[in-house]
Image (tube, rainbow over all chains, first blue to last red; front, side, top):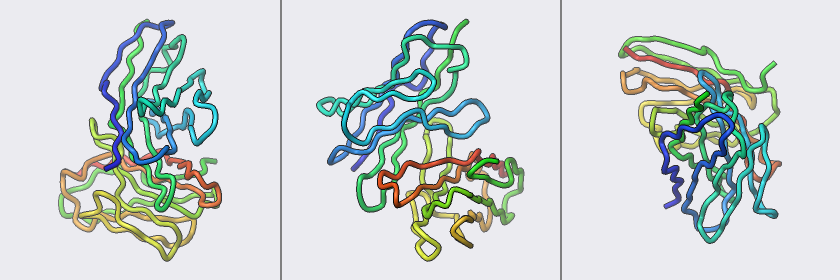
Length: 114
Length: 114
């Protein structure tokens, strides 16, 4: 069965430090991959997406993610975290045919220390 | 104006009451979705609709029903609310013509069932 794992429930980093949020998926083929951010009290905003081509994708707010087929991973990175990045981050896998449904990970909550 | 709107944004109700959550979109998308978010569980799909005449159950449809009144409107009903339906509910849309099913989310409705 398809699944998405975000192994870190909570991550705390200092402002200015680098960040990597992990996402692993199980899917029979190369899926569509997404990272969303949910700020406190807000809806979900798309950070970036991968469909095909270059495995390093750039998103908004200085985020990037790298698709690694051999590791079934799509980790999110940012070289220097800002206090405003404190939020919950969700990785999602999209079916590439048929229903085109999403499967969401359980989320990683990021805390940023001043 | 927001492309995907949800009403109400917050609702407190009592066990056994009938509740309707509404979603409207101005994006012209054909597909619409209802998710619920619970802490530690991420987002789970309740129902989805590919067009006005095509409605499908998601992974957690028990206790819920939906109505697609028009291409732009998709309502979620709880016929007899129970406390474990307390959650944050999101509506989302996507466009079949896009191919890769990027979903756009509304701001969410926070529902509390006492």
